[in-house]
Length: 181
Image (cartoon, rainbow, N blue to C red; front, side, top):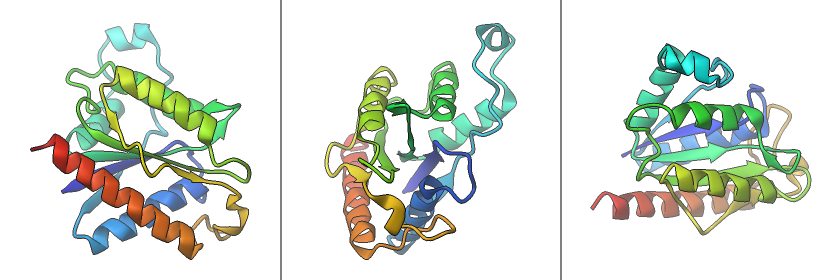
């Protein structure tokens, strides 16, 4: 099995990249391959640009997602919603022929010093309906009060959260297996 992850934060030491590092570590122990898909070099979505063809950076990222069995989205909440960089990437992915989210299991994860990205996750679920993705319903990974759960490098250090993340990954793997039967 192969799982692809996208961070909705571009900062290298963000907690969301830290979530993906923790995901990668857990998946490795389960014999599951993990690849982080970079979206930071995507141009802003522009239909004029799109009519000239899908940019190579978008196509390459889409190919990485298409080769995966499931997807993890780790994203912050900006202004009560999805981060702009993640929304832009999804807008591009939706324009690629045979878009890569179609029929795939997706786990949404997020962390914040406050509520744990609940509002952005619900907006992301609405967007993923259009993408025909199957979002893991439980457990929801909303890491609230994240300040004490990550170190200064953005690495997840809270053992209870790490254990909870493992349960979420098991749910993602199980959903992916059900979809691929």
